[in-house]
Amino acid sequence: MSFQTTFIEVLKTKLPKHISLVDELSELLSISKDSAYRRLRDETPLTLDEAVQISLHFDISPAALLEQATELIPFKYNKLYGESGSFKLYIQQMTALISAVNKAGGEIIYAAEDIPIFHHFRYPKLACFKIFYWSKSVLDLEAFNGKKFDDSMIHPEIMEAAEELHKVYCKSKSTEIWAYESINSTLRQIEYYASSYQFNSKEEALNIVEELSDLIAHIEKQAEQGNKLFDQGGSEQNYKLFDSEVLIGNNTILIKGLPKPVIFISHNTFNSLSTRDKAFYEETSHWMDNLLKRSTQISGASEKFRFRFFKRLNNSIAQSKEKIEQMEF
Image (tube, rainbow, N blue to C red; front, side, top):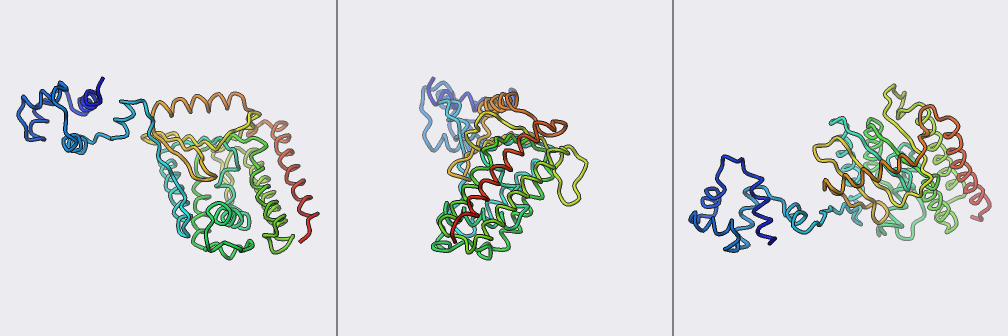
């Protein structure tokens, strides 16, 4: 099947059955009906200008057309750029998306290779450290070059945006799948900065470890009660937590409830690839369902399994704390 034939097939789906495609093309392209017929039968090639004009008029997505013609899946690259203002915009875009999910009564299912970003933003020191680390060690922002960790370098507007993102996430219905390794990246980041003398004091590093410990204690409490506790908390059962014995290869977020469900897959730390492709969504949803079946729910009544899981996380924190305490500053 030629590309033009595929294009015409997609075009036919855009018109109600009672409307003549020949008449529509003849009027749109200012050609005779006979010329329109020849294009529909693939006897006369469409010019590039004609194809663009038809696509714009009938709202045919080039990505969707390529997908149908070649079985390619269109992805959008969501990149955090190495610019000082990009982090605030990145956070605001996430906030807008989750707000839309909440409004639609949707759900977020998060397979977490790392602790989901939203949870860090409840704790000021830890949030500042994560943003500082990403800005300096990942984005390589010039303003952070040669600097030791300093929370005053994180603009208050970024912290306000981060706090708002956390609030919005607390209102969402979500299922998170963790492995005990999910805590490791944050611990390694703190240890790296401590061992490379990028903290001003040992106490500063230990304070961040302590806030990470508070985060884990809070997640454990949320899992116990089955809801995202914010300020005084609430009674809505909007939080499920699973322990996966299978290593989670990357952060994968599946969002249900929007007019077009969407999937995000992490790339290069916190950048992501996203797609609304139906077939890819269904395949990823199937993978997520299998992961859930092979995981243990530790929210709700699963006290024994929950205790074991969080004990492992707390042991990892204790080991990291001991390493830092033995370092020379």
